[in-house]
Length: 498
Image 1 (cartoon, rainbow, N blue to C red):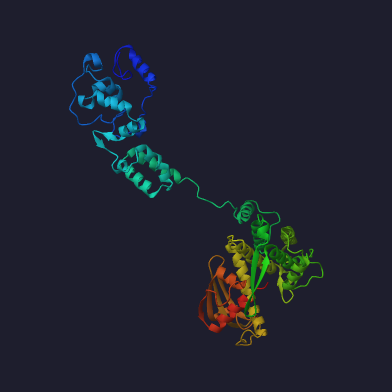
Image 2 (cartoon, helix red, strand yellow; image 1 turned 180 degrees about the horizontal axis):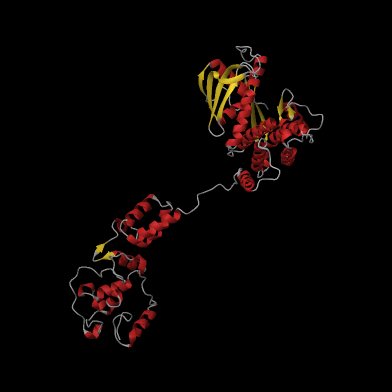
């Protein structure tokens, strides 16, 4: 019996061919064919070889002895049957090829045969410019994944895109790959978001409120100390010894001082000790410590081991936890407890806002020293800090007048009487609108007596209040009395201290 597997030769089912191939050391491995889903509508669903559709004159029918009978009663070369597949005898005579073409096909490279078979139809090449560029269909198909990820070279990208306009199967595959790329995750920083703890706790407490909640006026301090602790958690020895540049204003001059990360943390712990002392807790500097924040800092730096070790983090964090726990259990009346800073005093609720502000500012100084990004507080907390600064501005302005650094008031005001004011407008998250009394802290600042207006972005105002920029550098929108505007900007800078 003759058929597509015996090369069209009779006698014994083609065993003689097998023996000859094995003798030549050529195993009989069928040439690869294109996958079913790789075929376009214009390509017949059977394996083809180069020359199968060339425009040639029909060959004479072979003898019966050479070819034998095939289905349909027509004689056909056995190799042509191998190339055209079962049922080839039903096809027109011009779809056959002679024995010489069949021998050439048998010795051709299987990969080239498969690629040519996929793209050859009726003597017309469907690959267009891609074959001319030297890239076969199999190579172009293997580049689809890289093309979908946009990592191909310019030449490969151009070749793939030309091919996608010619091959429907590859175009569908490319579309599926491009959709899959959209499901991949974007690159993300491996560091945890410093606000993650705060958001998780806020969500949990929103579902089940705490039995003893943290007061709203203490929440900024709780959040900022937690953010700074998260920043310090993975510091190594080199980060702890990094040089941190502190900046603040004294009079009309900006002051600077170089410290280390450990020294900055010791400074925060020393000043937080003022709040701890007011609450009856242990002062880290002892009972004989001075009341001024600057003096306390200098005493701590001198008494501590030099250089300060990273071990300072644990006492500082333990003290902040103790402060939060104490004010939470103390109840409402504790918020008005006075905390002395030497030259002035603040209510406990304002003192913790002040400590939260300084914690954020110095955390930013530390982040700058180790080249790490650090975000501002949440809008709600930032608004509370700006409100505290706005309420302190009339007192800072009066202190500058007493020191001879500002012009005298225009009017002598009785307490509670309306007087001149400056309209301070803070833009962005945490912003708002405030009226600052210009002639006396006891005067009633109202919009009816506003003589000037200043507009600042929230972060810019906080940098000015921290002494990180000078009043001349502040990007402020100004309108009205220029002298009043200048004095308020300098009074804002004077709120800063070491």
